[in-house]
Length: 387
Image 1 (cartoon, rainbow, N blue to C red):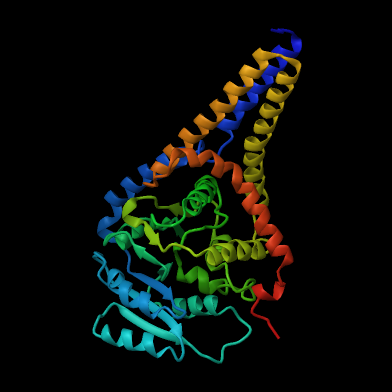
Image 2: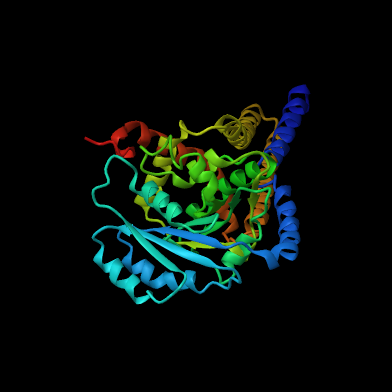
């Protein structure tokens, strides 16, 4: 058994980088969630009696079945102030029109449609714009028909954040339990970056269809101007354009969650590719990606160094170094798994422990596949300016 300077130095390096790998981790940095929880309690106690009127906007595209099933969940919210649910659908969608007629007597419902003649503009963003203009209230809550409120207090809980010093409220959406475990894991992996950025400074984007903003801001700054040519990315662009330093609230209470349908493989791929297409038009991305890339280095570089140290130790018969490397490899996997499980449990996300560390390692490769798909795609597929 060889104990020399190579063994001592090598073992020291392996131990240090392994510990750094655990600390430099989005799931390790979650102190902002504790502050958000304290803020939520304070806000609910002080402002529940003065909740503002709200306008909820839902846009449709061949979603008659979903709106029939979920519209009552929106119309029957337990909300003491006035609110309206604005449905924006496409002209000629007779099935949706028939369904909306059944709810015509509900005073909270308002609906309009996108003219079939609309061209050379994102129809999704046009639908949101029409909904905002139709809204009679200052605070707008934008969500997607693929989502449903977790309970009847969704509006009430989100509205507790509608303070004078705030102009955006980021809510949470989570996939149904039937969604693929990797989809659910990556969603919350990204969400921790989203929430931290909003809590620590100026929000960059959001990956949740649960967003509240001010109508006056939207109209004063011409809505989606600057991104109308891109078909998707409405939530990202709203946050990126209208966020200001320390004026974004984050709402993490389970009462405010939205439950999102299980995405198809095609829908999941398209979402990532469209996010890449819109990234160049968004501001403040450098610091966000710097932290993200640092975290990726912090998981892969220690893993590579540790495996290399084990291989070197076996070849040179430095068994203490080999044992240290194996121990540190297991330590990284266990501690990162425990850290992630605790972070995921904050959002009641249950996932098999043995999958978590492999999922963390695989994120970079999934991202690489998305980048390759984006590079190979016809860029006209991302724009509404098609000839």
